[in-house]
Image (cartoon, rainbow over all chains, first blue to last red; front, side):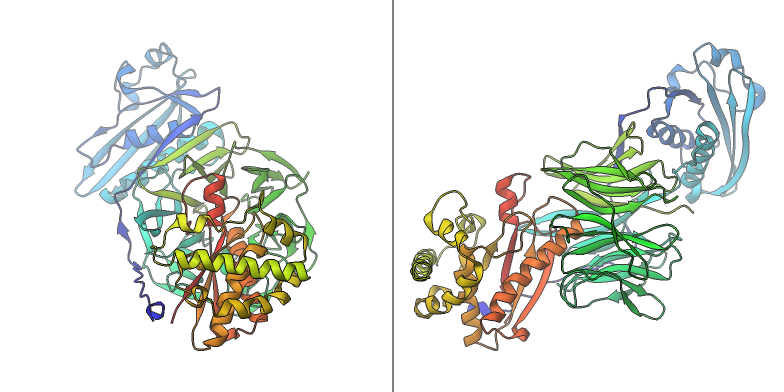
Length: 427
Length: 188
């Protein structure tokens, strides 16, 4: 009886962090009209292993707020405040100027920089910091954050990291799935879990040290919580049916999740210390994709109880359920902004799925992207950008859009399919 | 009622014929395509759509007694017989696929030591976890019909992969309709 044959499927699961060759590159597809002209002079350096100036330049350029001066167009290469001649920068229309130096202190590097307002001839920032060779990229991103905040008044997000899922075809309708974490500029992608069965729904713990995700590695759904530094993980839910959509409570003690062990998919809250489960929703339809309000009091989720998926809000203890969305025939996968004032979602009309953002005060939805298959919105920790997944021509890639919709970036991955981005929380 | 009964018997035998003739073919996606619900032509589809699903379930027990001796559905390895397709956003088993589900149910009732996994799937549109839930409901719909026809709970397991394991690549209707499916997987 050949159909009795037991098919042994080998699942490869990597617990250790391993480096991957695939990298992201980021293109700005739409920038702000009034981008500020900024010049960053190559840092004077004693053979630092990393070009700090290029990292800062790329960070600021990618943000869409600045028009960066190319190296070839620079009148001079000052590296100390005494060498700066403001007139020469004024003459070529630069508003701001950054200079810096890196000195090698026997393995440790000392990094110094200054930011100037060219028109006022004023120094706006001056810092020095020590960095190991391995941390020089981080130091460069930290400088980008300081310059960005000084010039825009908003916190920079260059020091953060992003998690996402990639899949690669192995042929014959089989794939390999990876959960990866990379710097916010797409550099240093590291695979934290890999399997030949789907991995889904990565969710950062509020302290950024752990990741919850769904893995089908045992041919059924289970939710794992993995510590990023060690790769150690615990398996927190593996009930019959769905174990999906994990979301951390803001105080890190609980996970909201979707289980279908009692019939239709419902939202539950799992206490991570006691493993106690509280059922929060109870409809006969699909309830899934919970997300916590930043105050921890309410959970927004997707429900099919009205026939089509719409967003609802419920108390985190259960009860007080109310419908939130009434426009569009598909509103799902909500994500709160860090200040709780906005809710990003997948907003569908007909065959078009775009990213929308609801102003929680007015409940009005502003559609930010063009579709046709945009999903998985995730706010940057400064609340000004939303990272999401798009699909065009059959390939999945990541994009970012500012919450006013004016600025867009495309993050291009050099292999496979990439999706389900999640921006790390503020450090 | 009488009309429906005849129609089901007819459908089952037609399906059996084609299943028999294709029995030796390797499993591939194109074989499955012709089992997609035909929504625009064909009296069978129209006739069934007018009747309630519940009627059809009751009737099929009769229809199946004839089919049982027919063979191909007795061999669930028959490639065409292992995938059930669904309409957009729906987890309702379409009448076209009831004979397939019932043939497996009958086989499982006769062979209580055999187990299956019903793998639910969705197309790529909409959000991923909602699609997992949709795939789960599809797998459960099939499981419920099987249970109603005497298959033991312990023989059935469901899992939903949502849109994570597409059968067909591409972002068009032909790919989508091949991806909204439940696959019947025999484990032992």
